[in-house]
Amino acid sequence: MRGLYPGRFQPFHYGHLSVVKWALEKVDELIILIGSAQESHTLTNPFTAGERIEMIKNTLSEYDIPSNRFYIIPLPDISMNSIWAYHVKSYVPRFHKVIGRNPLVIRLFKEAGVETENPPEFDRINYNSTYIRKLIIENDSRWKKLVPKSVIEVIEEIKGDKRLREIVG
Ligand SMILES: Nc1ncnc2c1ncn2[C@@H]1O[C@H](COP(=O)(O)OP(=O)(O)OP(=O)(O)O)[C@@H](O)[C@H]1O
Ligand SMILES: NC(=O)c1ccc[n+]([C@@H]2O[C@H](COP(=O)(O)O)[C@@H](O)[C@H]2O)c1
Image (cartoon, rainbow, N blue to C red; front, side):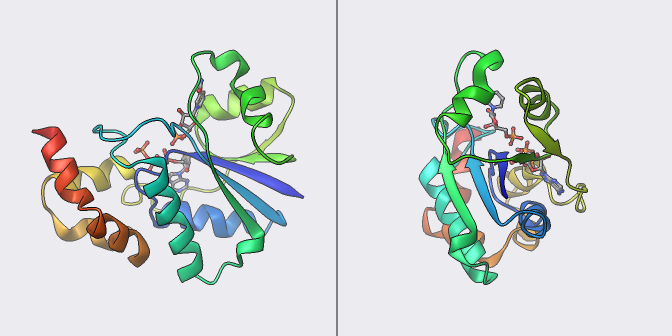
């Protein structure tokens, strides 16, 4: 059984990691779909698809999750929501179930006849990328408590915190 977990992961945080661990108790393999792969250097999507791949791959390795249990696949958005689920299907290995809490994503896959499952919310107040980006912009180091060590390392290596502050102006 293979599952699909879509998200923007801007950045990948402990809530996302908890969803991945939760999903891997239900499926043999998980496809982590990095959506909006064409986006970067904006307030809501500061990191490139490649940077997000590094964050996720390094985190899963940090947590000893075997690499044969997951795929990390970036995918650009398309202009038609009505065919997005089919667009995803045509780019990734076959999957049996979609895991996620984004209502539009769930709706589009349900309409395409794909089974969906909602993971629980893991401390959504703190594990929330919008909040983490806000803390980074405000130069508030509490963001470092909300993401895995591997994510801090990637953000520091690419000077992603400085990038975000400069984008905001
Ligand atoms: N703390 C969490 N617990 C459970 N699910 C989460 C949590 N944070 C995000 N998710 C889910 O993970 C998927 C990808 O989320 P996403 O990358 O948009 O993170 P986010 O924290 O919601 O970011 P943003 O604030 O930038 O939208 C979505 O289905 C979202 O509902
Ligand atoms: N028309 C489309 O391309 C389309 C539709 C629905 C979701 N998506 C993508 O799926 C991802 C969902 O992730 P989030 O829950 O992080 O927003 C986003 O990258 C979003 O752009 C794309």
